Image (cartoon, rainbow, N blue to C red; front, side):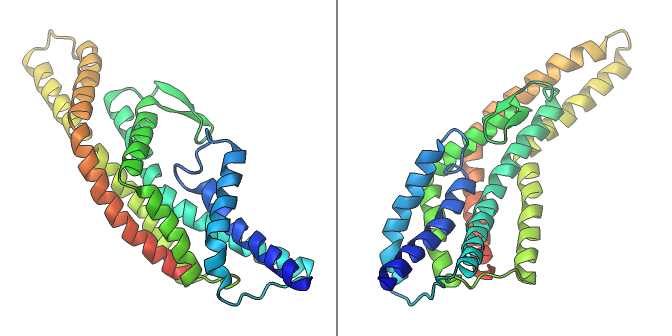
Length: 255
């Protein structure tokens, strides 16, 4: 009887790490996905991974407090991995906010179901666009592979905070701003050149009302550059995702 109880508790511990990742990870954890679907996906992945994980001896304490602490540690592993995976999408959404501010559409917002607040339209558009590319490049397969890898590098009950972990998250956080600048660079450069051109026109033709002309011109130039560079964004995002996968693997190693 005690053996069956121990196996059931091991199943719950595995379910805790996997479900925490599913809830936080990009695409899987989107707010539009019902909680029942996330829980069902977590249970399905637990059933799939349970035979592989149970092959290695795992000591699960049957006492309430040690078991609760073990579950919290497993949830932290899933949350940290999902948070690390979501940094790339945060950078892309921030790039959309930079573009919106640059072309003068920062006040054009919409309700985002992902973070439950008002976000610029271009930022939300780029976030959804990045999710489609992420699925097209089988990024969801990488998420599952990273989850499986955690059980090799971070066996059950061995997680602990360390200095390399904090350093890796600082590096990932700085990468978010690098990604945002790289993606928004074409529009921001085009807007800078447009403003320089308008400044020259204001000096050459003082009678022209540059203030009135600048708004529609900035929006038009920004949208043209944004949509004309959309095919290149697939290539850029693919390169960023491949480099980001290496960072996630390093994150998994220091968990």
